[in-house]
Image 1: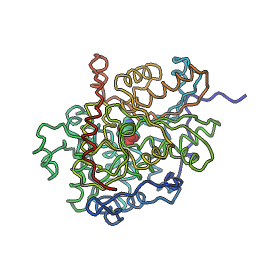
Image 2: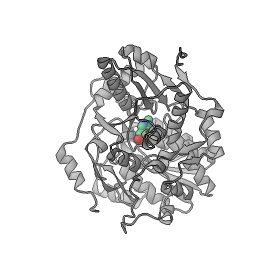
Image 3: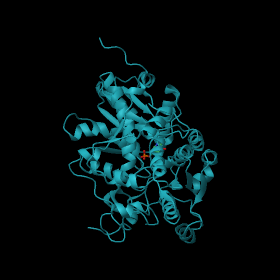
Length: 456
Ligand SMILES: *Cc1c(COP(=O)(O)O)cnc(C)c1O
């Protein structure tokens, strides 16, 4: 008989991926191109190069190379905290009394506490290669800013972070981690940019939003010499870097002859999910294998399940290229959901297109139920999950419980994107029974859809 699958499946150093996988190469119908908001024509490499690093622009526009080499220095950095463990959730399975086999890929084993470091280090590397002084970015919950601060300090680059104001106030410790790594952190909206001053004049009491912080970071990058803007999710280049999650998962599972039936991930801008599913989706696109893919989003910010597939602005200030994606409208202000990393109005163009083609499913889940699953998971698996990650846990548990009803022994793989140590206010609200489950009404969404740019 086959040997027992270990609790944790690690890879040897020599088994680690040396290339990222670019799922767009295997898509018959590609994601729609980014458009210049002024001309409504596809953005050229030159236009994008004013905002982003040159090599990253190439990756953003590359729809043909299936594999892209991971530079040696990035491979070396990855070795400090990768491979991330692929864990068989034996304890959770037992607790649920389910015939399902549950696996999770845990990305929280680094100081930034999430998968975001996988792309941060790549983006910092290319900025350094280009001889830049530094980069600017936004951060919502703080994970991306933390990851980028770590990556920039490693390559000796300046790092300017616009942090959504409510997080800046709610998560002072994240801010201090960033400052410890040498980053300059500004609460957004701020009066350090034109767009920030405009937004403050219009909404003096705003708590800020991701879309607004993006506008400020882009303005700051384009108005200073030797700086570029970097983004922690949504873009195709970020999904490419995050494919290391899926590549490692696949190598580890192949080692033991395991084939997942269902692959689940939480979806904010789509980078962890896109990265996790990419190599598996490639097999599906090439007709080699079939899998079910499920994106899990918060009911308070349901871009895939209730959004529209249209060109929209990526930011509130409307300075970024237009992207065709599932969106709630760039003016959408999600309610105070505790999963800060999932509070984005849009979704990766790659995932949007895959979803539109019916190759991926999406579900939305409510906050209280998410924290119930987080608590259940923490108590048996020993990891305190991030609220974002807990969306995937909730869905994985739901699927495992369906297996219990039907007696099916399905294999479930989900992405456990990070740890929740900086989210204890959220856990506090849950433990006190003060958590709300605000879901936007159809009228509210309609109002936001009305602000979409009119493009045919
Ligand atoms: C940022 C973040 C997410 C969501 O971002 P994606 O780009 O959709 O992956 C999920 N989990 C954690 C822990 C995060 O920090």
